[in-house]
Image 1 (cartoon, rainbow, N blue to C red):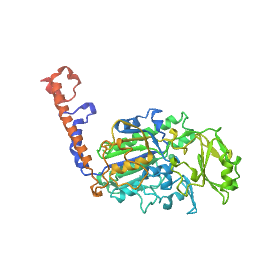
Image 2 (cartoon, protein in one colour):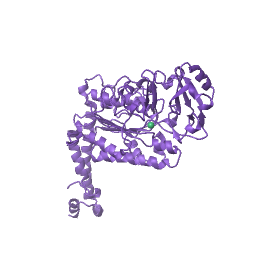
Image 3 (tube, helix red, strand yellow):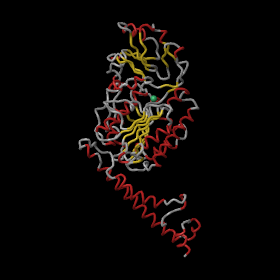
Image 4 (cartoon, protein in one colour):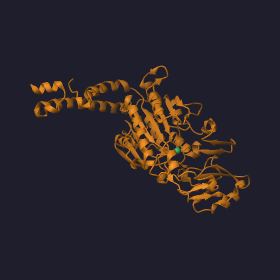
Length: 484
Ligand SMILES: [Zn+2]
């Protein structure tokens, strides 16, 4: 066939390109943009340059990277994952820790108990997967904190209940099937009928970072494995034709980084304070202290000057920049350890880890990775910094979802977009199809078709003029022409 090359394993590259060119407009005409948000828990921003990570680097070249993402305080898993999908600081969305006590509910929350599935803890905010559905979209949640909880009366359109033993590969296959519009027993229906906003969570490299410590050379293999997992996702999207579909966007990020601990950097509260005076609510490195009734002053006085490697705040003294004050779930006294220090009651209760996070969100070691690719994003673009609360309005913009009130700013991250333009949320929601996207698609397809045409013409002209390259040519038709 004219224009085919056997150098690609017998496949007809140009034919494939022409087919793609002709079929893509049919596949994506009028389609809603799709966005997949993937979190590798505890993937620090600088891990991508520590060992070869070809898949992360491919995403950077294909899209954008943000070097420093300032996440929200406290830099823990549940607060920061909820911030990513609400654009709210923890004091506003109400998931102020992995462990919480709510004096109004007189109830405790732990990410490791059934309490994490109680809607009342999450009701302070509406995550994007719910908002997307309210505005006509379909959402999918795979293990993302909160995505298997009924929030505002809704679950994601498709979701999996949390199951730590479910492999990354199975999670990806499930999400890709949802994006494709696959339904049990019915097979693939249509890409347009599939999920348009998906959130996917994986527990590593957080777990290894805690156990080994981030500076441990054994972390190299853990990071390389995460890159392989990202490669698996890219391949699955490619296999299903989603990767290059000009409506599919991918954001790979995390909730926080990780810092090295030391057995020499331990603060023992028992040295300063009687355990009967308080309840210990949240864990190191930011400890929530609930004093017994009438004991607030006594507890505060005992702690405030006790150790130079921790800072003690009454709730109303917590710096405004941390956005961690205006919520009853934040304890009357919090203690923040300096970076690398561990707060425990005594050494028999810890530390049992070599790495941790949760510290001040301005510390680079607490910052997560963020790379993004797809038609919405600029290519080969490096942005120096952003705040994690800004991701929410950016995602709303990409999905053409009217955002809920939030702490973020689209203006601060507009430069990440391939087509920076003002939000169009004042337009009717049924008009979610973006004219600017259609224009871009038309231009891209036009360029592809012209390129294909020119490649074919130039190749033929070149072959006719260079008989000495005969031995390199493998196509019978072209060889016959040359032999004439
Ligand atoms: Zn985490």
